[in-house]
Image (cartoon, rainbow, N blue to C red; front, top):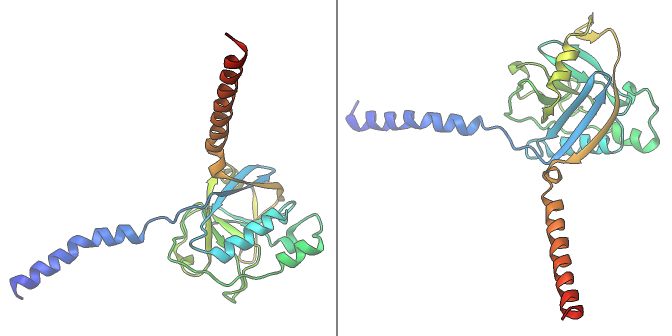
Length: 226
């Protein structure tokens, strides 16, 4: 092999770390945050709108409609997944007509190269790749055998301590599922925009109000004082 060929090969090898780094970059979380308040503590997560936009829209709409209230985690397999039940059959409170219509919708499979690691949110589904509805899992460990097979749409942002509590609960085996022996209820849910939590908007408003007040004080001083 010629010296020129060896130089080309070495140059290509030197670029490999760059390509590996780029391909393994974590996708950016959107600003929306969802909190599930369970009887064992809160679980907060965000979405990957650039990875699975249709799935994110669907799940976030279900949250905003209150569909996950009184639902539960039907599966807790330590080191693998904690899975939220489908809201149609998992809630204690009945769904209204609008909630049921949305909850029964399915989402096209939005598979990506994002990896299934602890904290990742991944849709549940049947054998049909486009059968995901409202059930999803929070990964409790790395599961590379799920990569590219299930739609990843978000990530845990707070509440790993709650997940660790769930992993310590007694379980029973039912077919392929490891299930908690007591109900892990999602008592209520709420959502917020993380960008507003920085108080930037509030500080901006306050500055404008203070500036306006200063102008008004000066105007009154010039008018009323010699």
